[in-house]
Length: 216
Image (cartoon, rainbow, N blue to C red; front, top):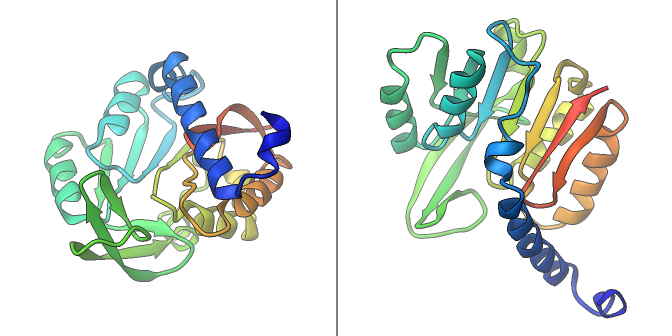
């Protein structure tokens, strides 16, 4: 299989790798065994959930560790559902915008399998993105104990901005899902990983599914 791989396009190799890693992730019970396993978290910890969707990750991580949790969801219907879900919990704050590399407004396309700024459809919503660095500085967030990122392709711009601003040293854990359907995704992902490994260690990696970097 290895000699054959060099004849395949990077897109095809990424797709094969993704399917392999999805199957391995479920065999290893990654959602329950890895994504919630942060024993260093506690009530004084700060968790950022970028791409809150329906709120299950925020709910599970808060139930387990009682950490101060910030949830960011720019898609209107998902935000309203999150706001209702967590309205009685003052330890979970929900924001109707995303965090990214800059203050921007984008079309967010809605498909049956989710939302994306890169997979176009005839249904879309204009969403707001606020600069990550500005938000943390304005809100005096000096440390993030867990930063979970599932933002449908915008993780590349965000992480490049965080690294460029030297902010990664403030983040104890970076849990990220890289998306493969972004132009030049493999090269950009590789450069981001190389930069993160200067300050963090890789604790698990299922490429294009989920991976986590812990501050050294």
